[in-house]
Image (cartoon, rainbow, N blue to C red; front, side, top):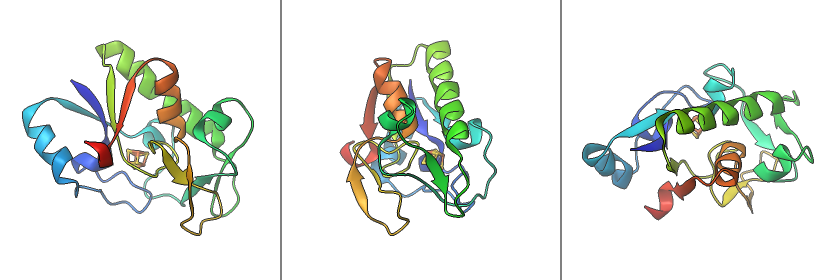
Length: 148
Ligand code: SF4
């Protein structure tokens, strides 16, 4: 059993109210083993659809350490929702004894190794999203959908 970003499994939870049911490797894996869909942004209390959000000048680790914020495209501080969502996902992982998470790439929550730089220009930087960073801190293996 593994956790998986819900949008990759066809749940319409993304900022634009759609899914990201496109990665054939994830779809194949979901037919062979139990993948538990989680969406940290919804679990953190954000609506769907929602205004796009990016970590500002930093990574998920920086957000957890209080060094930077997550803002939406209108400039509203949504950091609290991202931290809350990450903690809820960790709670689910502990509840079910899950040790792996298959993560949607580039998301400010689920991104694994790549995330946007906060300028809303599509520019990527090295780093994890907030949920990925918290799960890694707690010994959960995070696998980007790109590396399945
Ligand atoms: S927070 Fe994660 S699961 Fe939710 S829409 Fe974004 S990438 Fe998908």
